[in-house]
Image (tube, rainbow, N blue to C red; front, side, top):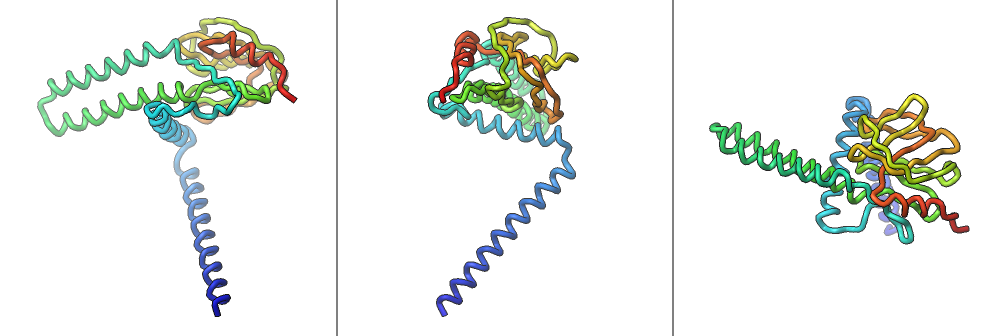
Length: 233
């Protein structure tokens, strides 16, 4: 009798697990069908940025950096500008609170302003807690906060050098000849030549290929030296 009850309990547990799995899959498929890819990417970015803000405040170790791996920061050129924007937003919040006479409108504006300040801090925190990573196997993970993430395997690296440039354009810019610029504070400091085209995902979900990658690192010489070292057997 006890064996029968145990079998029934196991069956019910398996059924509940299957139902939950099917429900989650159905919800994911429904979201993919209704919500455009750029919107999903932006929502995911905000969620990851919020988690990064918590990691930054709690002084947790950098995301995705293992023991013996090199974490290379890249926030130097944008830190002062980011804090300046936060200060301006705070001044604007205080000024609007004094100028808007309607309490309901004031509350709405206050919520929007506070959300904007937190979002700016979260974006910066995502960059601080998600550095570039030179892994033990010789691969390189190039990141910009939660918006951009590309892993370059060691066999795809033809050459790497310190190369300070001041390109114009957006955060992620791809030229017609396959040169990818990941720009921070209007500059890049490392040029990575590839042995083959490497696919990557743009911040809003579009796919493309790069033959050369130029990105910024606060200490480019240390990163380049780490990449040039042969991977351990």
